[in-house]
Image 1 (tube, helix red, strand yellow):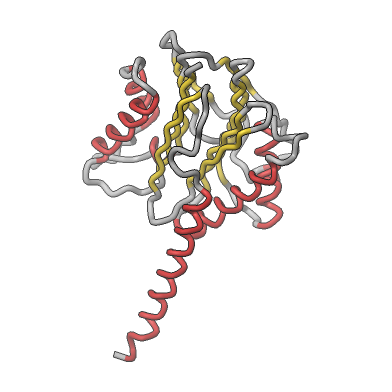
Image 2 (cartoon, one colour; image 1 turned 120 degrees about the vertical axis):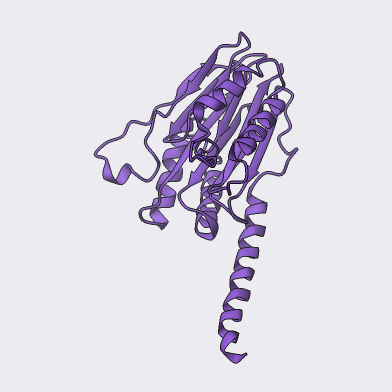
Length: 260
């Protein structure tokens, strides 16, 4: 019995560390219903691969009525990835206090990348940063190696907001990098879906990926539905597609819809 004591102690210690990381991650991820806006409806879904994970999102309401939103996906799973998301959260919170850069999605990502790499070498993560401007009916965005967001226009046109920056953490290997914001109109009836690669890459028993084409097809079959229902349809269809195959990655899906 004594020979098992060290092992049992390690299990108990690991469980305590995992519980601590889980409680910490719960505190840094916005709770459902905390996104309150007269201009936008918001939908969120987050399922870690383990009890904690590397998928992260957050938002910040600015004094001038604009809204900043970020989604990130840290490489790896479990406690290590959760630590990185905690650092991203901290950096994002401080970055939003800097008025010289907090209105530029690309500069927000640049600052977060700098902060993380000052503390941890060779840390890589994808991210998409968005600035919602209800006055100009515009989205400003920067996509750093993240899956393309899907913009659904009120006229049923579908547009993909593809990466314009490499994965964050790669700047140290590049001679130069231009940080630019892109923009697109976001008007009444338009919808936007953002997600991590855990959704795109989920596999069925035949090892086929769920893929961007299936997600886009579901979107096109749900044009007139509220963004919350479109998001729910995507999650339900991905679970049906995977069947009894175990999940192998975190999954995060966010939706926005212009209502005014």
